Length: 161
Image (tube, rainbow, N blue to C red; front, side, top):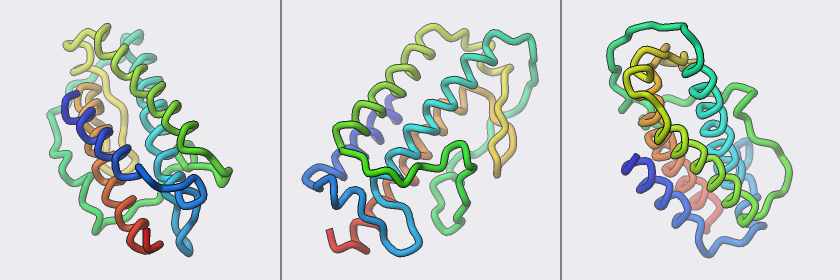
């Protein structure tokens, strides 16, 4: 979780000083910074929900750790599944910060209560890389945010911010 916390801090620092209008401005054919932040919230919320549900299941699978560094490689672009695609609604930084805080608090609460052995025996499929066990999904959340931190910096540069 240390890595996840550090990356989240970097993400939030990267938007300090930007106005709500700047955060919601979209480069042609791309997401706005706000949409990237909303995507991070939607994914973390979804993963915590799925992990919580799986911990109460008897369904087990044993898979090896996979290299998750591929997730931050921005040379490969992927379309987000519809269930984690952000809206086009104007949102304030305060609102998205509250949502991100809520999803992170839920992740931290899950980890405190989770049985690590069970986490290693429960899997969630990634739409591109296949199944990961839940313990690795916790790590993926941070690496996923690192990937999108680079995207935020790209958007800022494209918009001249």
